[in-house]
Length: 231
Length: 231
Image 1: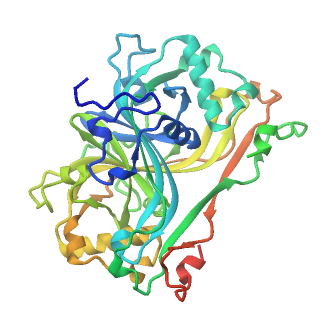
Image 2 (image 1 turned 90 degrees about the vertical axis):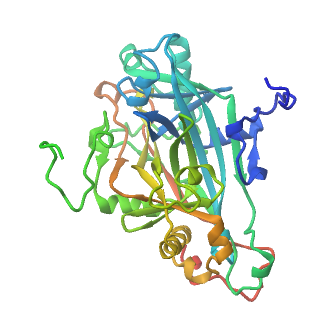
């Protein structure tokens, strides 16, 4: 660790050259609780990796267990194959990834076109994703991914059988080189623009759920579980 | 073009090796109208690029003009600097990017953990982003980015002045190597699982707007413009 490293803060991720933004530094945050909350609130991440020298960015489900993120997929899918041989092994070199999660909270309308923006909360994770080979950890990861979609759901569904486990690759990315970025509040118009005759402010985006739609072949005697009625 | 290339369809993007998925091929689509609609409906994209050999994925605003996407940012921001020198020049090599836009429409709950999923609509664009140097095109791009946030807004805000234009880099990515991927409908449980006693179906995600919040210093005589009251 270089001598200039800040004192270690167990409640925060240590900033690195690539997790300190070149601009709008006041929006950057490294607090673990904030990062965990932003990760848990989203449904999907955007997973970036390099394929034949070119960038690729794919949306995918994920789950979090403490300071570990898990992504799963078919053993035939490209990024999962690249993260190691079939079911990896500790000798697998791993796949360098950038995993990004973003919430858009509002549209920011300024008097000047230049200061238009959105309010957002994002997390960027850099690191090496590696195949998970331990069966117990693979099951834990798959439960976490299901519970990430709907908390509690893994206990109310059939767990993966051996055939499904064999067809599923799981990769793990440790939360180590991590940053959050948050923009809140109204427009930042220049003082000389505040008298212009344009409406300015924020249009908040609302999120919620519509009524659950049962599967066509659902036994009508099966009622909506409690963990869905509270959504 | 290899002899095996399909006949050109002007209404569709031509599939390439990296825009044909290795699995779930039935979800892939290349229809231009669908792609345009998915791009126009989202607020942000996730822009992937390679930096020092490693992937980076950043959320950012964008705008579309026909078959061109535009991203803007500070002339000091990393991806925009990498896309060419200050204000580029046709000799700039450009920046290889992957630009991805994703809508999550619903949570798919199957009887088996394995078949849990989300309904989603995504677009992935591969290509070389290049700095835009033409002043007219730069203004068109900035208008498109503002109008992407709120259609019609560019006509009701102060356009960028020379100082702001000089501080803003604009990069363009042509829609050429493009694919969409769409999952809709209910869970795909295995036939032997449909009798299990777990609720199965889809929880649709609802999107909307909350009441606009005027800026603290907004002149109270300025009423909400029509293009916001219809949101």
